Length: 148
Image (cartoon, rainbow, N blue to C red; front, side):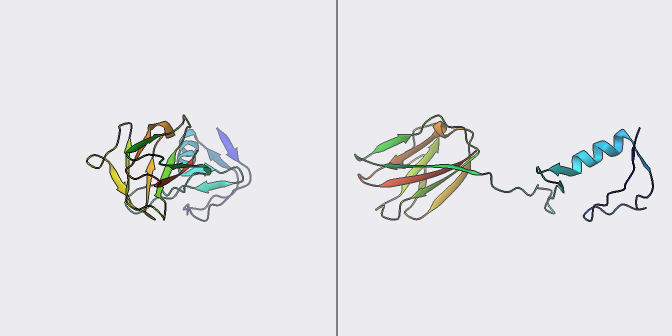
């Protein structure tokens, strides 16, 4: 069984009684700390959750932007094979009407989700090639930001 030679307090995790001296660390304590803490490359950080139990998560790093412009009416955009974690789809401010979004299926005004000019939709998706956007009007544009 390992020992902690120098105690290291966690201000976010009050331990009673406080650790002093050479504390023996059992496998149970090691597993508990591994469950409650994470490593961000610089330090151990407490994993936080909301009162409902949801973990607090931040958005992943931005990876790129894909912009498409409709050259003909009733056009469906299919995107390249790019692994992603999240995408934000935005209608261009100059669009005259909504663009329609669906995943893995051709979108339309009857089965897609509408995203109007200046509106945005954020979804989790594992690959950009699953995203489909239908544009009704020639010249309308969509902007897709994605993360990895």
